[in-house]
Amino acid sequence: VCYRYNSIDGSINRQSILGKYGVDKFCFPQNPKGRSGLRGRGELFRWGPNHYVQGVNVREYLVVNSHDKKNIIFPGEFVDNSRNITFPPMLLNFIESNLSEKYPENVVQDIIKNALKNRILRYHGYYADDRNTDNAWMETLIYDINDSDDSNLGLLDTEHLTNSLNLTWKIIDKSVIDSKIEVIVKRARLTFGQKVASIIRSALKALRDENKAGIMFAFGDAVNNFVGLSAIVITLVDMLSFSSAVVKFKLSVIITN
Image 1: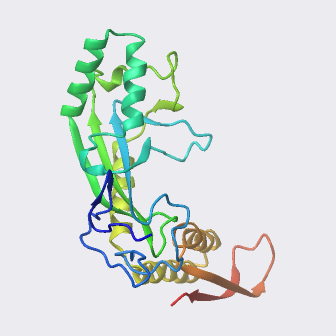
Image 2: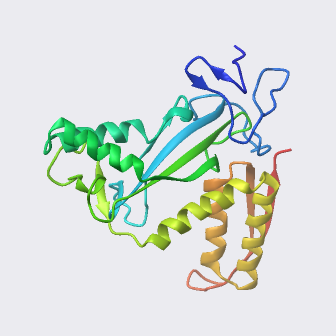
């Protein structure tokens, strides 16, 4: 099946925020950020761009309740067409359902309407996700709704009312959120070659500093974020002891052409 790439295909938007992307002779769309090292659709829903919408709600911050306290997950979902999406649909349904347990319908609609008036688009573009492949990739919209005086979405009660999305309010410094979005933007701008170069620079710096933790972080970053590395080969040259802060090794990075 050859889908109508670079166009609106029925209810599905197959256009990319990055502009027109290539389609090869086998009718496979080509990742506009270059080769990832992994062919096919992978774990993503669609060939070509997969549109993902996230909502950042500011009272404290509304996040997915996670056992990993360091992990900040904003509610989001894949959508067929991001053009007409003002906020993650499932999140809007949750908000409406939650508020309806405390307020009449007309009040709930006014709350949502006022909330969306304060909506700011923080980012719309390529999303450097580890599920991206040569032929399927993620593009995301990140919306920010500010409600510092608890007059709209800040009225959500995640403790006592229906909470089907397992959300919770969490106090997070604004600089942490800004930094998280900045990282998304920076990673999205990198080509595959630049990603590899960045990984190698991090590993070499860790080597110079003889920082074992830094070295392991660099490798973890490679494995978790850049599927284009088909292999990372580490040859131990000398290990003084498990308690030693220094591990000497040789690093080889094998890249799929």
